[in-house]
Image (cartoon, rainbow, N blue to C red):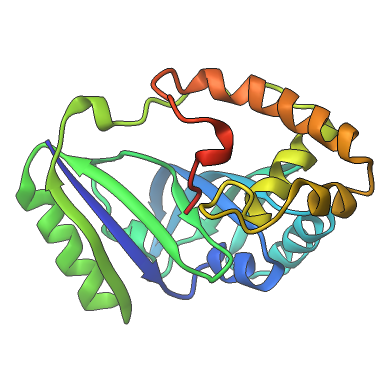
Length: 224
């Protein structure tokens, strides 16, 4: 099995808004189909960021003419869009996603896909490089099954727990070295330090069990 990891920037309906509104987005491709001369792509997306920024993101997304269907629930949305010259046009059924696509606050997409044959990913990489100006291969290696992410239904977080964890991620609390203190995060959330810590710990206690091999403490996790 082979794994290819890419960093891409293009006229992305999601990534450019991540940069504009300072949010992160985790995306999973659900399917692609063609009707006449038009190709469509469907996906599920999870936004991480401040509540007001997420609302602005969604409001702006609704105005995009490439959007054909959009359903939103809090920070999760499903999207059907016209797929005109986007990376997923070159993705085929011989490959599979190792992890969700990540769109960061700098407007870049991070793709991590796998395939049984090296040639499948080589062809994908060549097509992407030929059709998009900003493409960087971060990794291309042989891998083991244990490195493949197996999706698990995410636990339900309360509004306050989700806000606490979102602030910690976007603020750089889980980066090394830390980019923000708990005190600043509590201030940003407009709650006391003890209240913020309570919300954050409860969120972590729901999320961390989903990663059984995780041995590091939450504060040592690096979020790229």
